[in-house]
Length: 130
Image (cartoon, rainbow, N blue to C red; front, side, top):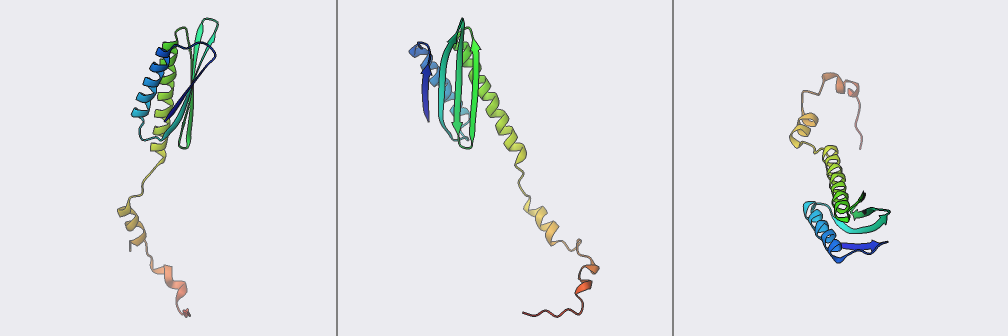
């Protein structure tokens, strides 16, 4: 997985290392998703530190931004937002995917209970030709 950093302000190496560590933990927590890349952007606005994270995975793109007075707090809040978004996405997928029950399918389509005598009544006297 590729992690890119960009900044409008000077960012210490310790902050980048902490962001890389949290991204590695995030990827490990959601290892079922094929996360391809992440872009972390640092900015400052007056007294606030802004962290934006753009995450790309297979069939998925997530974006989280946080504004705090401390860059570490902003980073933690942005990753919490990403964690929430990913959890909601996985719950949504889990709810919408319903697997067929093969035993029930056989009962429905092969059951003699569904066959009625009048089903083939209109075919009496019909000659089948091949």
